[in-house]
Image (cartoon, rainbow, N blue to C red; front, side, top):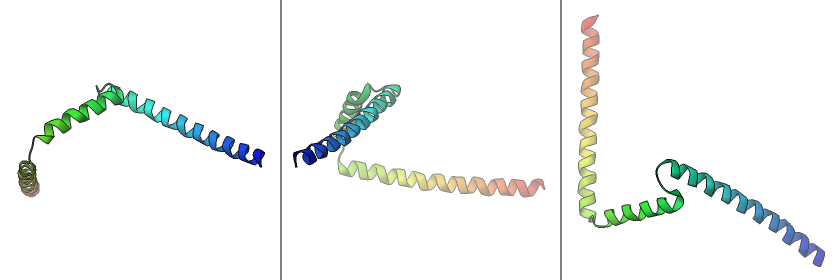
Length: 97
């Protein structure tokens, strides 16, 4: 019984060690990627997130909703411009034939 228990713990311990090593490799890769973007590793990313949250927390829900509406309107207008430009391109192409 003790041998079976010891084997179970050993297998679980090996799996735990593999999982910890995988997490460690992931964290190191993430640290390198974040450092490459100008953030100082995970600590820098967390600090940046805190600063962004603090800046956004002062905005009301109504302000955010109004800005979303303006962005949606602008996106629609830009879509219309793109469609008109496509029509002009086709017209120009037809005239040049």
